[in-house]
Amino acid sequence: MSDPTDKNPGDSEATDSESEAADRTVENLAKELADKLRGLKNRDELTDYAVSLLRESNEEAGQHENQQRQVARASKGDAFNPIAFGIPLMVIGLVLCGTGILVGPGLAVIGIATLMVLYGLVVSLFSRRKQRSIE
Image (tube, rainbow, N blue to C red; front, side, top):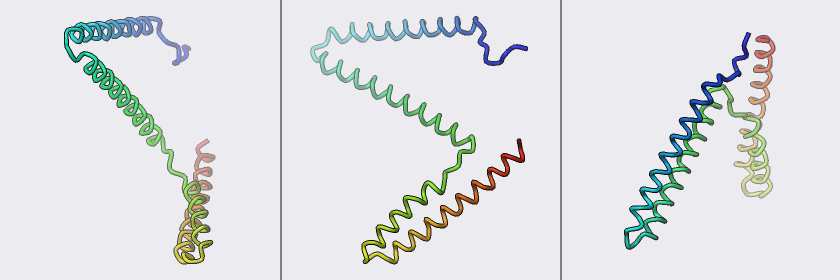
């Protein structure tokens, strides 16, 4: 049986040729832009503007890829961990209680944090039981 991770040599050649074609296209566009900019009086300003546009475009593409990765991770069922939120809330509640003036709100925050931690423990126990029964 063949391993599904094995790549077909033809696929890498096609990808290389597509990459080379894209590189040539970008190079041709850059040369064309440089030729047009040479003839203008305010070419320094326009060159800086073009570079800033390219940088922004690159950053937007990176952000889009990040968003796609985060959506993929979220769709895998990675739920937020209430314990991770409960612990800092507990600290905030203790600080509020420590002021002496905000004891009431501090106790409320501590109560919410305690409930979050308990809920997180219960969820993690039941999710482990489900995983063991599946295996």
